Every structure is written in C-alpha cells, then in structure tokens.
Length: 142
Image (cartoon, rainbow, N blue to C red):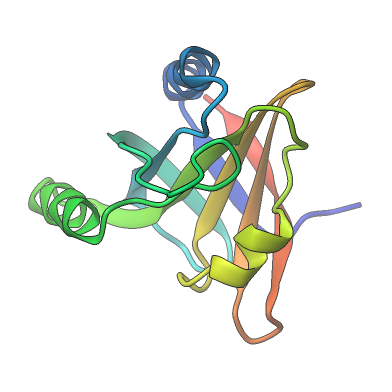
C-alpha cells in the first residue's frame, strides 16, 4: 500500500516524544510540531513544542490550553516555521486516532502523530476535513 503523504521526523525528536510519553504515563502527553508544512505531500518536522495536557480526563483525552497553543504558534512563526501538526500519546491504546480524536480534529491536512506505549509504536495521520476522516501517512525518520 502506498501512502500519499509523509511526515519527516528527526530521530531525536521521535525519541524525545517517546521518552516523554513513557514518563507521562498513565496520562496522555501532547504538543505541537513546527517545520515545513505541505498539505498533500511531505511535511518536515524541525522542532517540537511540548504542552501541558489540560483535559478533564488526561488518562483518556488530551487538550492543549488555547492560550498556550497560541503562544506556541507565535513562537514557531517567529522562528520562521509553519504549523506541521500535533502529537499525543495513547498510554494503553493503539497508535491510531480514537473516536474522540476524530470528533475533535480541527486542523485540516495537518499531521497528527500518535505514540502508543502498549505496544510501543508510533503512527501518523492527516486529518482530511473534506472527508471527515484521518488518512494514514508514512513516517520517515532522519
């Protein structure tokens, strides 16, 4: 199966997110990716911006405070980066979007990287608002 889009992630960033997810267990961790954004092809992560999970039920949901999210967006834009996407963990679930993730997705064509700890695996998806669905994308480590 050929995937239409790709997310290029530096190995050091992937490893930092995995470690943060492990240390944050049993709660979900979350954050924002900055870098070079391509809505249909290859987006490249240059940096990650960890955020506190402020969800009412952080073991099963994630939420970035809107003010914090705006501050992160301003920081990455000041660095000449675009909003590539978001990441969060599923401490005891699969590395694919949950029904809640689908219901709460709001950034069309952005990447949503999901870290699973059981099993330890990483998946990435693009939110396609036109079809109201997530589309799997390839992860390329560099």
